[in-house]
Image (cartoon, rainbow, N blue to C red):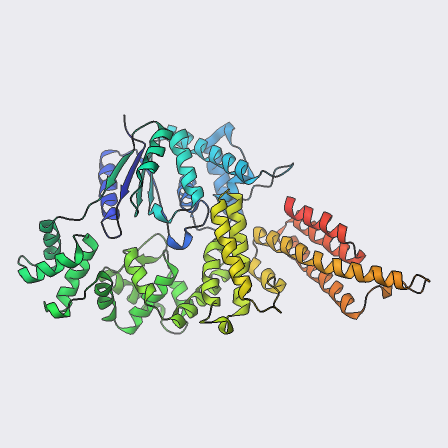
Length: 549
């Protein structure tokens, strides 16, 4: 029997990616018909529901995993799904959680988070099984230490319900015996765990010699390198480069791997060093257009491309799907860790602003929340950037709701805890919900617009309750008939009602432009409730339609 799961484990720098690449090369040569679907976890996306699976299924149906949901991506996915599933194609709205599609919400009460997760797992497993009938499939999930709870849960479902699918994962942390036993018990087949070990002294020295392109190595240098690398391949390579840069002077060698990496980075000129700092903050798939936007007027297009290719030639960066990233995430962590506070804040703010303006790519709320959060925080409370903090709160709420929808309760709670922490930092006079900011962030995204309406309904409810109470008091105080509808509120309350009506009309207009009729009707219901000073109407009509729409 062949195991459906191989787990390649080991600490950072041990060579998991190298082993995986060589394995895939052998597989490609031997099994020509095998279809390989690859995905990789990312630190910044570690709490985004189904992040690696979005890459897997986007590849399966032939669309870009980073694509924003449009009519084109929806049509492409529908055609591919219909071809694969035939008469079993279920156009369920739960597929919106993983694919760039926009299936309408089903009639009736919405599914709770657990039933939604189970329904999605059922459909995705059926899709994999149908695809495997046409050609064998190998799933590769790299860097699973950065994957969220819902992604791990879906992996277990695939292992149980898709016995013909072969799965290879890599993870930085050694899988605990109880985790392995749980997987073995669920799939009822052996799970192969390949725990990578450090290189032996002779192999480590061979790697150092190869990096230095030399046949001989001074024994004193060999002893120092072995003492400081402990046989970890990445460490061996970085220290070998440090030996080369120091001219073989032992006194010049750094004492740690962090020092070795920093020594190499510090020798770069300011321009390539700036490029590395930006990429360290962003992560993967960093496009030249993003770098140019973060530091406008700094590079010409040709200069920037030259700097990127120079860093590739130094083996610091590699080209990935749509841009550039660090060859090894440990080097990225070192560069990011040594940014100054002001540099981090500036770069996160610029990157967040760039992502908000994107129109052709889907950026998760988790990423936007992270960048806005890092940009908002100052050295102390007095340095807090209030508008940026509000944006972080907004996207943390959206990320939490996405996690709740995927039944990733633990992840959702972490988002909400961060949200609460930021709200505690806001001045007491600041309202955490900023309508103009929220509506400006929507930018054609119906899901975000629904979030705007739901939060707006909650905030407007409090305003209308207060205005309703004031109106009731006016009626009571003028029981002799001197009260009339136009005098129901004072100037301030009337102004507040006008604001509620105006903002509801703005949401209705944005929804109408998007073709989101239910959302538009919900916003109009809020406007009518404000016109009538009808608190119950606001909560019943506006809130109900928003949640159901």
